[in-house]
Image 1 (cartoon, one colour):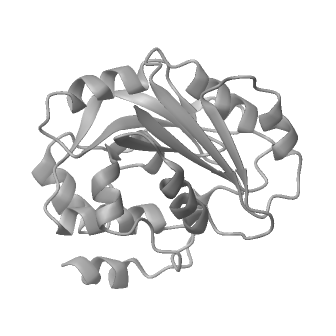
Image 2 (tube, one colour; image 1 turned 90 degrees about the horizontal axis):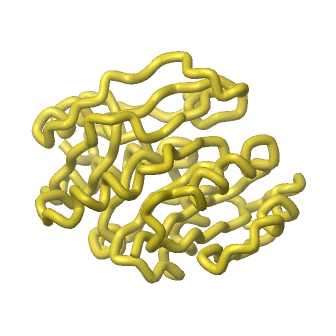
Length: 222
C-alpha cells in the first residue's frame, strides 16, 4: 500500500482536481490521508464530495503548518510507501503504477519523477532539468538544485520515521530539507524518465517562497 499525504491550507481553487488525479490512479492499492491545517475556505466541503473508502480525513483546526500536518498524517499512515500530494498539483494516471514497478525491484528508497510546470489553467509552461541517476541527483541537490519535486516522489515509510519526518521550522522548504536529510543517511534516489506530475505555479504556491537561506540548509548535511 501507498499512503498519500495531502496537507490542505486554503486549497479550494485546485483541490478538487488534485484529489481526482489521485483517485484516477491505475494503481489502486493506496490510501489518501487529507489533513486540514488552518483552512478557512471551502476546502473541507470539497473533500466531502468524494465518496471513496480509501480517503481518510483529519481536521487539525487552526493548527497551521504544512510540516506539522505531514508529521501528524505520517502517524496515521498504514502503507509501506508514502507519497505527498499538494492541493494544487495533478498526477498523471499511471504515476503510482510506474513508480511501484521500480519500487518492487528493491533498489531504491526514494523514487521521484520528471515533471511539467503548468499555470493556473493547467497549461504546460515548461519543465525543470531533472536527473534520473542517484549520484547526479545527490550532487546537484547538495548544490541547491532540488532534484526531487515533492509531489513527484514515493518513499519508504520506515526511513521517513527514522529521520522523524519533516522539520516544522522550515515552512515552504521542508521538502528540500527532507530529501537532503535522507541523502545524508545514504538512501538511494532515482527519478522516472517520464513526466508524471503537473506542478502548478501560481501566486500563492510554495514555489515562490524566498524566505529561507538555502546555503544554511545545505551546509547542515554536507
